[in-house]
Length: 74
Image 1: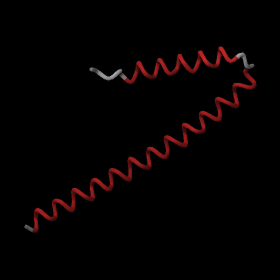
Image 2 (image 1 turned 120 degrees about the vertical axis):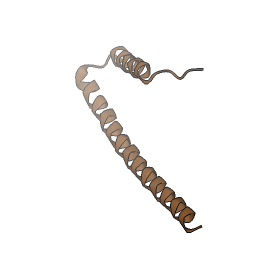
Image 3 (image 1 turned 30 degrees about the vertical axis):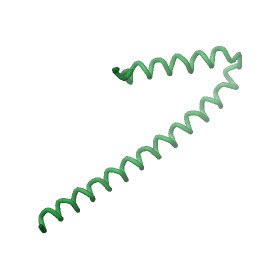
């Protein structure tokens, strides 16, 4: 089974968020701080993911180097 394309997931997520906001009945001055808080959380999570990716990549390079060194010494 094919995974759903990311662009479809993005569009569905956008539509779902918009629907929840519109159905909340809250005025925009109350929605704005909620959206800002969510945005700040997303920024934090994105930064954590980036740091993890960098760490994983560096560890992968280190392991490749070690394996290559072992092959060269055999």
